[in-house]
Length: 292
Image (cartoon, rainbow, N blue to C red; front, side):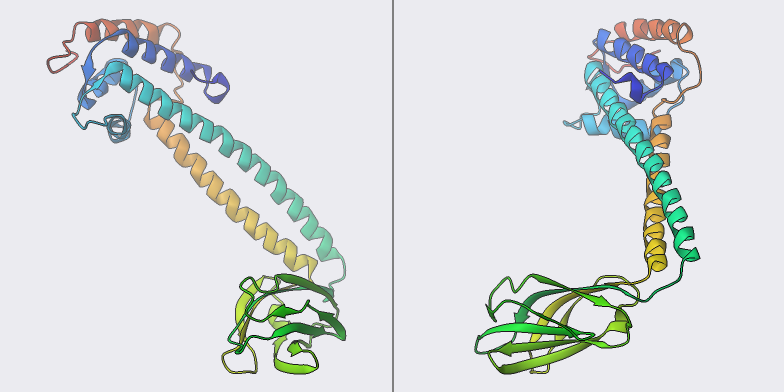
């Protein structure tokens, strides 16, 4: 039913005995009956959380469930939460290791000399607004480095989809884009390299010098190891914060369902379960089950 690695042995014993109590009887239960059952067994549960599990299983919205149906719904909820908890624990541990590695890398690059050199990547996508359509290509120049795309019909629906790269050292000039057809320059635009200093990917439709003609660009300049390491560190710390918050929320819900208990259930729980089972057996499915 459940992988014991996902729950403590105490919780596993609790859940197994509870399932046995509910599946061995034939009573039809309401939310109130289930709450009385947990109270008799001295298991602290959150009434609203337990009610939400009950309501999810109550497809007919009659307000009553066969005990076996509730047992299955309850076990499934605990199993899902336990599996999620295990996954989140592994994620947080992995993120802790990655963050420590990034901090080490950051200290290393801070001791080294800063540099403005790095790789500039240019992605050319679609072109719109050139009428009539013509066979053309883009010539891209940056710091005396020249790259040329393949020739393509200007109205090609997927665009060029090409990636060009440049080794940028000064970071003070412009990236010049020229749309050419044969020997004719149809339109141009320029993007300042310093506008990419934040090392983030910049995606936008850029106006060319010809009215209504735009090109889809994605530009990124990776030049500072320290800034790059800081960006990665910030991203991983945010991921750790979210994973930790999700883990705490999952654990709270498990505790709200009576799991994560500290009591040894080996004798106490079984004795109480037997008493509760007898009460359930004496209940009538056709009448309100009060568990009194």
